[in-house]
Structure formats: structure tokens, C-alpha cells
Amino acid sequence: MLELKKIELSDKQWIDPLLKLSDFRGCEYNFTNNFVWSGVYNITVGRFQDFYVSKHGNCFVFPAGKGDTDALLSELKNYCDSTGIPFEFCSMDIKDKQMLEQRYPGMFTFDTSEDLYDYVYQSQSLATLGGKKLHSKRNYINRFKQLNWSFEDITPDNIDECKQMSLEWCIRNDCDKSEDKSEEMCAVGIGLEHFFDLGLVGGILRVDGRIQAFSYGEQQCSDTFVTHVEKAFTDYDGAYPMINYMMANRFCKGLEYINREEDMGEENLRKAKKSYHPCFMVEKFSAVYNAGKGQSE
Image (cartoon, rainbow, N blue to C red; front, side):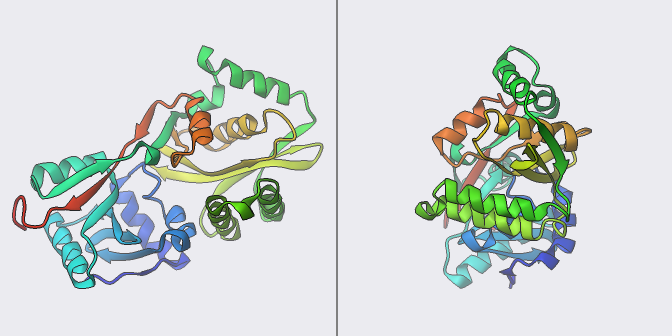
């Protein structure tokens, strides 16, 4: 039977090549995200043929990789039957949803929530902020450039400043009063602690030599960069637009898209992400097995 275990940093060596086989843009198909959020979402992982299998709580993310899909579904269903959990998928890419509908008609019931859709932007759009729609963002950038500012890569010499800023940001934003914020900052901290082993890249924004923002991410797939984290103080107007702008120019050249992940239904975050006018959203679906219905296995 399929064996699952808690994800470890050393698993990156075998997981990344399987993720690469599918080349998904969705942020769930990313080792860093699975690793840093594993404690919050109880993520366990395993391998079946050349499929990467990850289970978030009691729900499988539809496996990335390649192999016999019939055998894969049979293995996952047997696992669910033997462990007494429902057979269901979460955060499924639309192509896999369509595949299940075509190959196994009536076998699954599908649902979706826009709260989980990833926001994807043209890299050039975020790097240039051209056009009337982004005029206000350019104004923020131009005003910020009048300050005594600087931008630099995150390196072993300055990463401790990011850790300190993360703690201060948490204090300023009352993370102790919000479970969601506390969990997020725990994930941010794990990312910073293992930053270089995870292959992350990022930048620091300073004003008068003091850190005011940091951000980090990595290449998600063949044409997309994913921004995992973006944190800024609000001491100076435009810190968030400026770190976003600098990251796009520093790390996203040669990649067509930037995935800035989901808004989780948080209204202020949704407003901020929409204000940059995404070129499309990565739609995600859930699928629940209908026992005794549809095509037989």
C-alpha cells in the first residue's frame, strides 16, 4: 500500500524532478510551500511510480508526475479505504479536472472556490508598470525613489536582518491575536531558516540603511516565478509597490509570468492583488469520489 510520511528537507532531491514533469503553475505544486506549511496543514508525502503524492490533512493534492493514472487512482482509493478517510482531491488543476471528467464520467463531484485561485501576472507588466491601469503604482515608485533607498539580494550576510524584521512585523501587526497571521509568520520563518537549502532568491529594501521590506520566491515552473513572501513596514508610502517592482526586475527576467499566490478570501489582500490587474488566475478544484457511481475502476 502507498506509504506517506512527514515531508523533510532532504525530500527535495526526489520531489522537485517529479514536480518538473507536470510543470504546474499552481503554488501547491511547489516543494517550498509544502515544506514550510507542512506543520499547519499536516502535509505528508510519498511516491507512486513517477507521481509525487502529497496529502494535506485528509485531502490529496492531485499528484504531479507521470505514470499509470488508473493504477494511481486505485492506489489512492485503497489507501483511503484502509485508513477510513474520504477519497477526495483538493487544489486540482483544471486540466486534471477535465481529464477526470472525460476518463471517469460521474465518478467524482467537483467544486471550486475563488479564494484559492492564484493570481498570475505578466512579468513585464510588474517590471515596467506601464499603461494607465498601473499609473498609481508608478506614482508610488517615483515618490519612493526620492528617498535615500537601496535594494540588495538576500545573502548569508543579511538574512538575519530579514528574520529580525519578520519578528518586528509580527509585533506591529498583532500576530499573537490572529491564528492565521501566526501560522503565516511561522511558515515565513521556516523559509528564512532554510532559505539557501530551498534554493530561494529574494531582496531587501532599505531606507537610510534600515530594512523596510523583504521578499522571496523562486522559479515555479518553466515560464513562471512564484512570490512566496512579501513583507513591508508602512513607515514610508510605497514600500510594498517598490519591493514588488524591484523583485520583478531583479529575478523574473526571462520568465513570462509571476504567480503571487492566492488571497485566501481576505478582502484587503484581494484588493491589493487585483490592483495589479492579473492576466489570469490559476483555477483550482476539489473532487470527491462518488461511491458506486460512474465508470468502474
